[in-house]
Length: 361
Image (cartoon, rainbow, N blue to C red; front, side, top):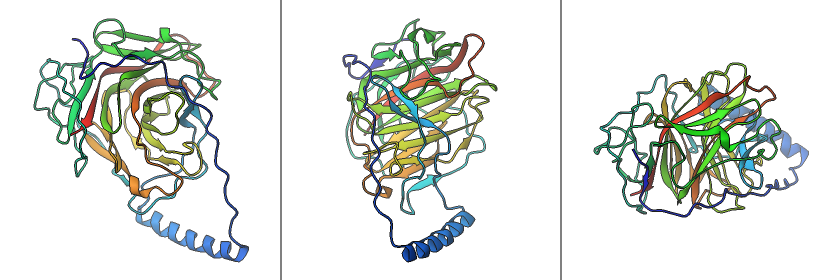
């Protein structure tokens, strides 16, 4: 099989970022007003918790946020989640999601299109056309209502497809992590991100930057109960030196990989108190094959697993100074060590069967 794209772009160097500076907070209200506010907030919070109405939670462990001069990195979690309206965040727990459908082995691409988003999130269910099969024998949907396929690959041959690049160097602010391009391999119709006692693997695709789109990644991780090497699927700004925004539509905590989450980092301070929207943690066996996805539109960010929507964030929930992502983004995939423990040898931390990108139709 071979990877194809609806358009071919020159491979750019890895995205560069600066160090986001947190905005200074404003002075608080007078003491008597603060006391009343605390009582009101406590009361409302208790009612919301009792009713199960929270669609988001505050990040409680480091999440992948910023970058050094060339690559995304991990950073500190925010102390407070973004203040949101009541219709901000949808969450639906999934006990067991169906497997992604398979299709006959034929590759397909389509031209990029830009139009209004569909009224409701689309589910990438049974494809109406045929597609190539990846390392696990599954395939990406070729026809999804409201979306048009713009790029797909099942990682044929023994090297990265055109437009892809492997990471090198230490993630900024993460002394336990280190990337080495030799830890990225392609074989058996799949992309492999390896981890060794000294480094992990990461890649980015620079060949199809899009403003808005649907992204699907068919992947699995390995079982590492004594390690904290997390796997991530991310949308990262295509323009060098720009960050935020950032969309982490899949992030596990490593180890046994029995759960994952998503987080949206919005401008102007994607790691500050104003601008991190974290999804609820979703129970799922990350050591088995799953298709993780995100549908990014001008009005919503919808997260999917195996074609099922499990959480979403509304753009009208953002409060100033937060800003919805409206710039071209690239897909990045990476493993990153979050602790000092290292593997005893070489392990296959993340295996990716295929990826597919779509534009709004």
